[in-house]
Length: 76
Image (cartoon, rainbow, N blue to C red; front, top):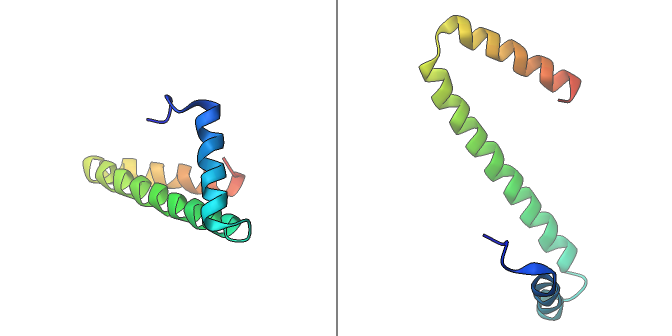
């Protein structure tokens, strides 16, 4: 999607954003964009997992849940 923009295009977009929003608002906009992207990824991940859980047996769901808990504790 963004593969055709290149470095000069990204620099131009950043300069235009800096002119429009100013240096004080740019970090705030970046944080808002990052948190929105994080929530979107979380929602799509939960949706995919929910569909997978409906297709698996109860024993397999228990195994998957155990693995997910272990991964969250170890930070993987």
